[in-house]
Amino acid sequence: MNREDFPLLKQDIIYFDNSATSLKPKIVIDKMTDYYTNYPANAHRGDYDLSYKVDKEYEEARELVANFIHAKNIEEVIFTSGTTESLNMIVDGFFKNLLEPGDEVLLTTSEHASNILPWFRLSNKKDIKIGYIPLDNHYYVTLDNVKNAITNKTKVISIAGITNVIGDIRPIKEITKYAHEHNIFVVLDGAQMVPHMSIDVTNLDIDFLAFSAHKMCGPTGVGVLYGKKEFLEHLEPTILGGGMNESFDNPNEIYLKDLPTRLEAGTRNIAGVIGFAKTIEYLNQIGMDNIHKKELELRNYLIEKLLPIKHIDIINIESDSGIVSFNVNGIFSQDVAYYLNKYNICVRAGNHCAKILKSSVGIENSVRISLYFYNTYEEIDALVELLSDYDKIVKEMI
Amino acid sequence: MTEKEREILMKHYLNPKNRNMPHDNYEKVNSRNESCIDNINLYIKWNKDILEDIVFDGEACAISIASTSIMIENLIGKTKKEAEEYINNFTKMLQNEDCFLPKEAEIFKNIPEARKICATLPYIGIKKAILKK
Image (cartoon, rainbow over all chains, first blue to last red; front, top):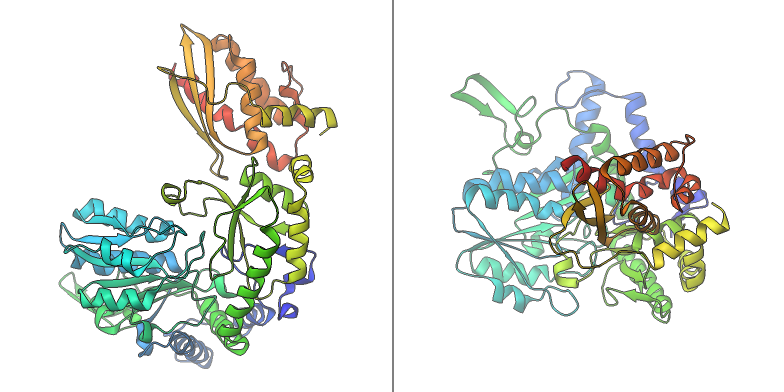
């Protein structure tokens, strides 16, 4: 659906790498061009009309995002460069000051590098323990496994809402409820979740959320850090500079601005944020529930078509998102990707930045199809036809 | 790439020589390309300055595996100096310069430009091993 909105889809390309990044609708591209062309002023810093317009649109973007994720307060939305920066800020600006040696952080083996490496570094610096919530037979996280993994040292659970290889939707609300009953913080990596289904941070009661604009039809270089206001107040800025300070005279007298500006040092990615606002409006118009429903229909269709093919091993047959990971017997995943590329089909091969997942799944690399609402049954048919002919794959992969 | 060259490549990919063989007390070097997910370990047994044996394991694309298999076959028995000369010639060939290459290595001359990096994968490891020697 809505294919006509995407300039790239006018070309002869089938794009199945939406978990890496999504395509951009013309309306978003045009908005950013409009900014650069007609009012390319800085935000927060001008006493003239152009700057006022930038200021206004930048803050309207914040309000749109706050409403989109159902945050209680607009200042709970901080614009960052992406999920990675958001997660690093949460770990280094908040938990680094809060956690004590011996405290424990719970992750899973299917997390993306962005939700592992900042914790690993903290673990090395402050003697914080890293624990893993075990995955079940389908590589899912269950509430029971969370309960069993929690110890009296557990202070934080930091997990993805949807993982980028298995594509499972985690029972976040239940986890958060149980965690809060035990005074445990919950950090949600929303990179693969927020673009694909509606999210309500107030209802889920999560403490921190990170996600990126570029995976949801928005520009690259823009992301969001959401945090409950009472926690964000204690998040120490990891970057200092212009725009975020009130005044300073000497090292002992530095006064910072209030939220959210305090956490947005330097000139921001203004074009990106304004473009992201357009993106949110666009997604709202389609409806997040419609997007999720369409992806599931496409996924079910793809699974149904792939299952009978004997030389294909699907890693995640059951999953409630648009991610399907598989391997072709005896053929390296990257060779499958090269083969499909010859037919202008874009898929991802590799470990998808989930490098410790192999300890749970036993497979290091795979081919990943990640769907979005603009994909079609016809595109899936074209893919399946190419994958069903083993001899053709072997013959044409180089 | 000609049909004959393709056949040689597939032969080495589907049934590579010297893969997953015993390598007790061999020297290990890792080969990986930053731009992709290929990841191969070479295990080398030196006899003075002669490459007495080389085996490998790991995961990589068809071109990388075939290139590793062919490289190993061609290097076993060579002295350090001969190996260096072979490696130089292989590099020159990929840069479209004329040079002599033994048995089967010349099939990589005609692979697509974007895939030449795949053919160089095992050479990253063997160069490390020779430098250490």
